[in-house]
Length: 333
Image 1 (tube, rainbow, N blue to C red):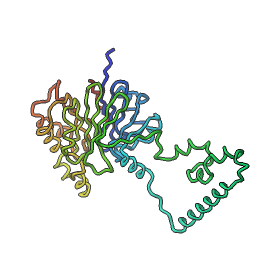
Image 2: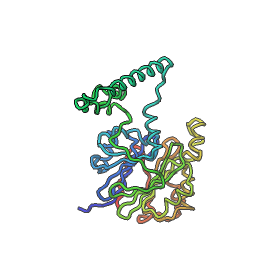
Image 3: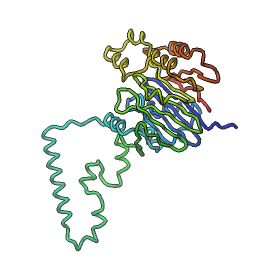
Image 4: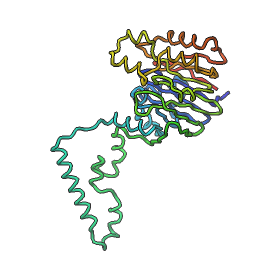
């Protein structure tokens, strides 16, 4: 049986959840985890992918349609999650909102901390002759430290971690503009204009194949245009039709956000890039993150086909549309 070394599988794309699996050699990466763990696993198996073979998760930004199932999925599989530091911090704040504290509670907390410091000072003054007998005890965390972490004793560490909504098996940081490697796949992250803490797109390279991932961006700046050159696969946002958005059900404030320079790419903006800036070298062009309220698949398709101006064929610039409710057939190289 012929085995393809490079594969790209869009499991979901849209405002209700985004997930894509990139396979290169012996490495499989999940890009975003915007579906519930159960639904993610169901769609992977539907597309012929095995969840247990995933090696890592990489995150574009912290919005819920990209990270809704992240914690459960990462814990279930025991795999590392790659963020920018800003995205990780924003995700943790989203999961663990700041707790309000009254002045009386703050005073009580200060009193307890003072008592704990006093107890630790007295413990440090234990007779030197007893040091050998107490070495093992003193090397353990103080009771106050354990309690403040939410642990009754060291043996309960695992349950407490599981109760922490932001706990992950492993976290790795990367920076936009600095390529890194995950197994057999080289990852090049680049900054995109979107209203998130530190949003990025990616170019993945494996076995000489380059696959670009650019959704959730208000416009296409020069740095993104440079990254999207010379790719074999291009996943590009085509979020909304301008007329449908203006006449649609969203409040005006939301419409302004979507239309802004840190919002989402319209069919017309995507088409302008494909017509004027795109080098035409990709075998596949996938339109992604289509709005269910402010777009129609055929509108997005026709607008992009017109921009490609006859360059689309079975061998080059094959145009595909990623869907929200079902996975796209895997693309093999």
